[in-house]
Length: 311
Image (cartoon, rainbow, N blue to C red; front, top):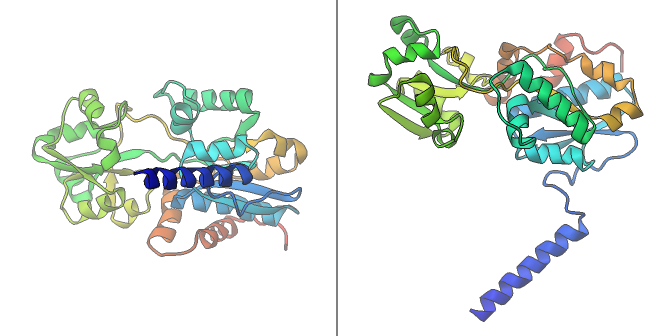
């Protein structure tokens, strides 16, 4: 027992020494050391975040004399935001309003999308001297889906319509969603007033194929997932607005914008230019067609005439 305790103590000491000597760097930051001519972009490990980070990177690389580096594969929104606060990154590629409000800023949730965005923008400016840019044009939130055949047969357009088939239907959902407080399954059943025969916890990536192969009658997926279109699924309108808004925007440290004001209008060129269908298409190209996020980002910018010079 004494040997085990000693080994544990030595391991803990080594870990603390490593963190101390490395300046307690966050995971994913080792390859993104900043310099005076480098703009660092923080990204989650999701397909969507990787694509958006590369769009920003390619745009800055082409339109300015800056170099860029992507602070890659950060595991959560708070971790990504910490990278900005600590000065380990300059730009947060994706900032989802609902997540920022409740998880990063620890503020009360709201169902009002405009109020959520304004509150986040005001708070990050006051607390952290950061600018929340206008949305790219899409939001990524949980969405109930059925097949097109089921939608036509049972006349399903909105979530309330599921009440007609719930007592004979199964639903596949993200395992984490089942027990979430506030916007999870239990609160959903109270809010909408019905529940399904059985709710099956699944990996989120499997729900789309489970629905398409009729192993599930209804699933809860993500609104911008490329598989919504590739499986031709019907996304139902959240008519009672159960889920909080998740508009996606860019978050930037004001120190960068103050240092070089020319960057601001360049970054604003992405305002309201990516709608939900475009984002699904871009995600699909990476997830299903196995293109690299950088390739998809560059194609998007070229096809939409973002590159103005010959650089």
